[in-house]
Image (cartoon, rainbow, N blue to C red; front, side, top):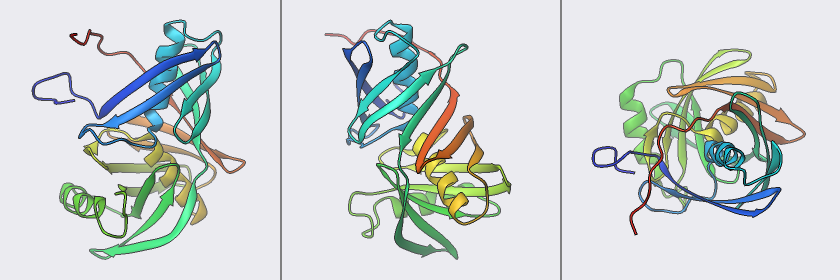
Length: 222
């Protein structure tokens, strides 16, 4: 995962075909710690599983540590995935005048809505909150700006990684909280530095949809 000496990545995913309709996924952060869930990782596993013929159809299941997650691989490479049931946790933290509220979607998130997000806020607040005693297992930290009733700009400090270009569970957790606070509706485009991700809240579950593309292949030496 070292971007200076290797390809660089936010983490490592292991995919194991179980049967023609199910593929198992496990995930490690860049620092080697185990993560419960990776939303965009689910979409990447789905795209690669379909492309390699591990499954029989475009509609199948990714088995994850938080349970089975249905996915759909569309023509053109876009992938739609259900990534969990978000819950607003009754816990918040006031940092530099901003309220960070907690949402769990199989993994933890601390989210604040800020009109103008700065690099310094993301790095200093993100690193401080990631391992704050309030979060015994650490937390992901989201800095969100509501741009309209169906659009959010987002930057994410990921637990065990640092700031990343995209975070599927972070986008879903933020869209869920924005909906609960009345900022947006149940369908939102979340604009991250790595590109847009569409989030739909349906029957208590969060679905994400966006591109998933192969950018590099290689062989790990024995």
